[in-house]
Image (cartoon, rainbow, N blue to C red):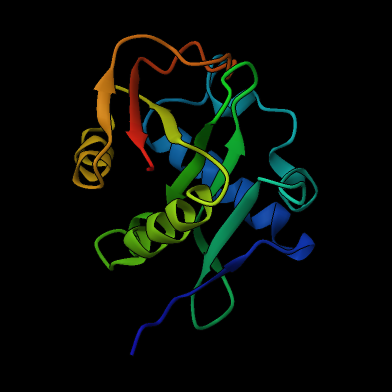
Length: 161
């Protein structure tokens, strides 16, 4: 039996999601300007992702603790392109299949609204890069839109249809 439930974010999850993201950013040395670390809306995901064409999902363990999440949001200035946003899992959830379930949920949603899905990550997140490639993301060397994450030095895009 799967110990994790994937569901849309609720207001009660905002703080826990922020802590998951900050914990992972610290782990990978990304707790600085130019990364999600400085995003002003980290603690307001239930509000930010409640708009049309946007969603955020959390992975919750049997005790109700948020162990990961991911989101889809539009890319300003890039018609038909969304961004896979804030995909992070705590170390204890990695390798359990929960990231796959989050990715599949996000991509299924994205296909309803967008032609392509873009993401940015860091060079030292090599396991994440292998994971994205497994899902058909191809590395690109130009940025799409302006995410504000100028420190993210690895970019991927995937055709959705």
